[in-house]
Length: 404
Image 1 (tube, rainbow, N blue to C red):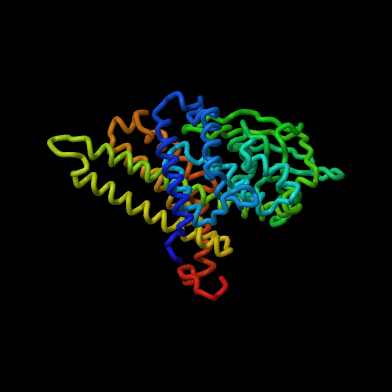
Image 2 (spheres, rainbow, N blue to C red):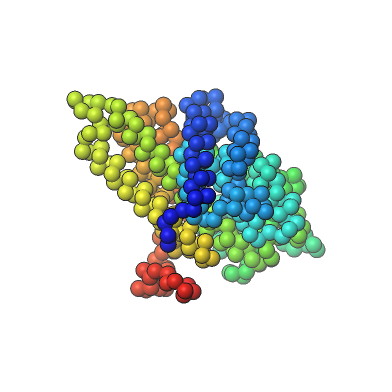
């Protein structure tokens, strides 16, 4: 692939960088900027969103005809990394999970009617959405074959019963994308549905407390006891739920990595800023070989992560699923983010462990990275399976002019 980006992408990246530096980063130091769950206060977020939209920095991941900026996946990699220099950044530009992945999958697979009533309000920033898939034991998590939530056909409706948990954003979402079982067929036994918060027959049981700062709407446990969803709200077709999930999760995992790279770089930035100013035993921290080794190793790891993400983004832009490339990036970058926050705290000492910097926020947030959208072990299993299937071809390069 050609690692040069277009002048248009660079202009967008630079405008995002200025917006983040001038309007978002200064807010992080003000306790009044945070809600009770340690994310940006909604009223403040809405103000920033209006500004971002007025400057053409809104929903850049979507097609222009949908109301977005028309970036390809390579362009998204560049811009998402810049957005997440701030812990508040992605939400400001309407590029945060779970809305990000939900919008892209309905843009790709939804009917015109579904795009109009379900997708358009999210694109316009009027509502938020949630992806409802994971279940408590003994239901389905990384293995959808274990899914217990059922959707039984009754006339023109489907009736949903079951339980879900760790549903990100559910507490504030109005639009939901639900995966439920419609048969016991291993490949065609799942179906995706769209529903609205006000539809009867379901409830939020609790907002699950977590160790880290929370996305808006938290991570909730839901119960379904007779939710009726009309057949017109089926995404793609009955029995094609795993296809919908594959379409959504592949790019969603990669956009997580794009954003996490921005946070990892921010950890380096905070560490260097302190190491250049702090002296001990007659020498600045930045001049100590031990600190240089920490920072140098971390910089190399971040650059590896950027290359892995860009390779996966390029593969998707070529029309491929890039499952192997996405899983490789997901494992590396998720672990990288945790190391970056840990090293940043170590270099800052007690200051890093305090709330005087964003490092402790990022550290707590980072631990979930190795779990969300597939735990490390699941992605390593994917890679091992690919190696078994492909043998030495696992390491092959795409050849120009040849299909792959």
